[in-house]
Length: 191
Ligand code: F6R
Ligand code: ZN
Image 1 (cartoon, protein in one colour):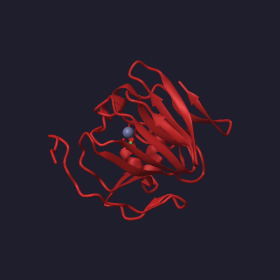
Image 2 (cartoon, rainbow, N blue to C red):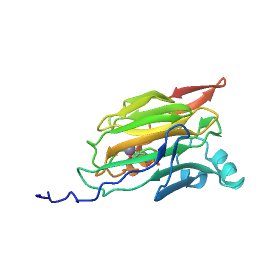
Image 3 (cartoon, helix red, strand yellow):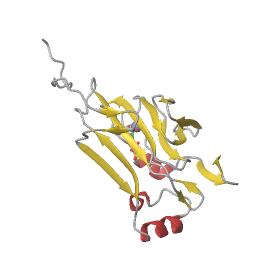
C-alpha cells in the first residue's frame, strides 16, 4: 500500500447515531458555546448581556468523534442549537467560512425548525429552510450559520471535508449581511 503524504492512515471505526432521538451516542469531543461566547454577533447587545446575566445558558453544542483534519478524511458532527431569542433575533450559531474555502458541507436536519443562512464574500445571502429530514447543501465558498426559529432544539448531522477548518474572523468583521428576526411572531430575513 502506498500512502499519500498529508493523508493519515487510520483504522476503520463506527459510531452510534440515534437519528430518531437526534443524538450521537459516544462523542469524544463536545464543543459548548454559551450565550457569553456570542458577544458581538447579535443586533441587540444589551439583550444578550441580560441573557448572560440570567445564567449564561448554553446556546449550542457540537458533538464529534474527530478524525485527522486532512484532505481525504471526512469530518462529521451533530450540531444542536437551542431555541430562543436575543431581543427579536433568533438564536444562531456564529457562522463561518471554511478556511479551505472550496470545501462544501452537507447538513441533514434531524430535529427542529429553522434556517441555514448562507452568504458569499461578495454579499449574496440565501436562507434555506431546515426541518426534520431536510438536507441543506452548503456549496464551496459559502459561509454558513444555522438559525433556530422553532421551539425545540435544532439538530443536524453535518459532513464536510476534514481539511476545511473554520474561518470565523471574516464573519466577525463583515457580519452576515442579513439577520433572522421575529417580526409579527414569524421569522423574517432582514438585510
Ligand atoms: C462545521 C460546521 C458545523 C458548525 C457548528 C457550529 O464546518 O459547519 O459543525 O461548526 O454547527 O457552528 P459554528 O462553527 O459556526 O460556531
Ligand atoms: Zn462548516
